[in-house]
Image (cartoon, rainbow over all chains, first blue to last red):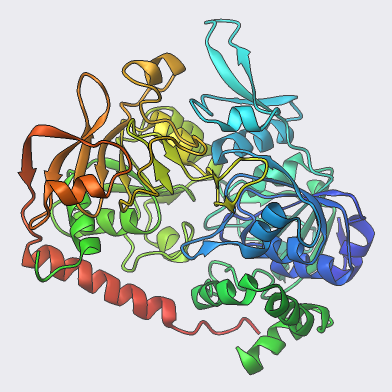
Length: 281
Length: 261
């Protein structure tokens, strides 16, 4: 485990063309890391996330991605992700190939990836046209009962990036609250980067909570507020009003680009990004 | 129904279909409101599960997203996502699943993926999320969807989630274990599957709504049950509970969140 600045971590471990999963189901979404990828102008990424959320709307709109694997692509409780829609419907700013799943299917793909099994299995995709739309969704026969079950290829990202509440000095990472498929996405990855709210001397004993032990963690960056406008349980709440405002910002290509220029490309790091919102939001 | 909106009538109609201690997989929006009204009125022991992994949650305000902190803080427990879909949903431990969609057909199949062809959609919708597995594995599903001829269509542009597929027995043959869409709660009344044909038919109207209005809101020739009942208007307690919930929710979502600096 290495302790790096976020900029160093992205520079070193996220090259153009990589398969990258920034996970976090509504909670603990690694916004700061996504913004750093945008600042560094990464291109041709294969992005993976169950719920692309605003962070992938921003990365797709800024031209970072050529492929997206996902299972639900909306702005939760608000409506569309307009940049994602523009990419799929109109190929703007470039074509985006999609590999579409259900939540249960992509979760099974991460579980298989974490265990280094070749595929995940589920009683899923029953009666859905997704099977015809996505050739990666197939079926297997149970060798014991003969039942047909859905199969999806294991998901093993080159890099998984998470945001977590705490790490200790040794590099053990602890997260709590809604934990989505973060543990599975982390263990499925070849490289694991984690941004954290806080680095502490020692984590409290927590036999059954989610801890990613130091030797599975490639690098940690200290990044307070790194999930904003999503949230970090125990640190700050989800900015639901921002999620609602994003609808109007992202609906139009020019207002989207102006916002990204001002708040992301025009800021040096996440601290400056947050400061830029203080004045005008 | 003079003093309540159609949204409120829909929400109360859905809430009344839930029973105390039932285990319910909740979606965001109208279903979330309906489930919490049920919990705050006649079904205090209802177990609400949101797909973000929160089990037995008792939120004071409705969540904007499926994973707001409020849901985790008020839950009996919070489990990882592979667990909620594997150990709870696919294992058959959920009684009722709520679903919405952009389109529904006469057999209760749902489209939440695209309008137009999949490869070149006119409108790209958010997609499946948890819906296909909820549709297959919940003991039964309730669909909440406002009716227009554009949403209640003769043929879906894309089948995201299975209702009764092409008719009686089809979902069982496809491997679905739950009983499928047992009620479609619209803004004019409730449709239920015909026990023999599995085609949705009008069984319940809201007060003041006519059969003609229901038929004109649906894009196929809607069949009408022999006995159509009229649902009682919301009680003062139901309306008060729902409106207070929405008022708390609006205030909470508009509240400025301090930036984490």
